[in-house]
Image 1 (cartoon, rainbow, N blue to C red):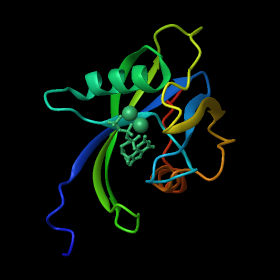
Image 2 (image 1 turned 90 degrees about the vertical axis):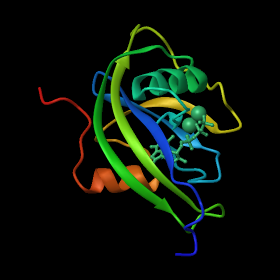
Image 3 (image 1 turned 45 degrees about the vertical axis):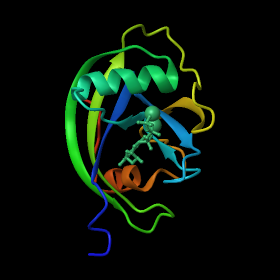
Image 4 (image 1 turned 180 degrees about the vertical axis):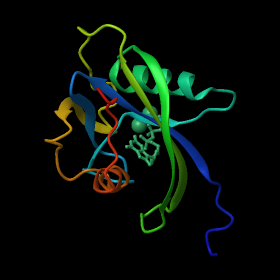
Amino acid sequence: MENNKRAVEVAVVVFLLRGKKVLLGRRRSSVGHSTFSLPGGHLEFGESFEECASRELKEETGLEIKQMELLTVKNHLFLKEPEPAHYVTIFMRAVLANPEQVPQNLEPHRCDGWDWYGWDNLPKPLFWPLEKMVQDGFNPFPIA
Ligand code: 8DG
Ligand code: MG
Ligand code: MG
């Protein structure tokens, strides 16, 4: 395969739930530009998934999170992007440490802003990995 000299990367992303809503932001990064995606980013050397999730949430939104749980793992190929990439993406679930806290757009070069969306009223277009999960019937909310 032509891309076999490139490294596989690991990302940790978070379904941050507040009531029946989930936090999404519109991407400005080249991968998935203008689509709505979860907060998260690259796993750094030596980090646990929970440490990475907390750090990325803090860096991107200023939010403190708690009750982190591993939900699922996906293998994502972005071979048609301007910069081809291959991610193993770890999906966590969490809630706000302080429910009053409001998300800030701390990386405006990477995101247009953060907002809460009902699972039955998700914005369009979703980042394709998220769109695929929705189409496959995935639901991040705990069974009541
Ligand atoms: P960093 O420098 O802060 O570590 O990276 P980042 O700029 O925050 O990375 P990112 O693109 O937000 O996330 C890394 C990769 O994770 C992304 O390029 C592809 C993969 N990924 C998915 N699904 C999702 C998702 O819903 N949200 C985010 N943010 N990334 C996702 O496969
Ligand atoms: Mg980041
Ligand atoms: Mg990110």
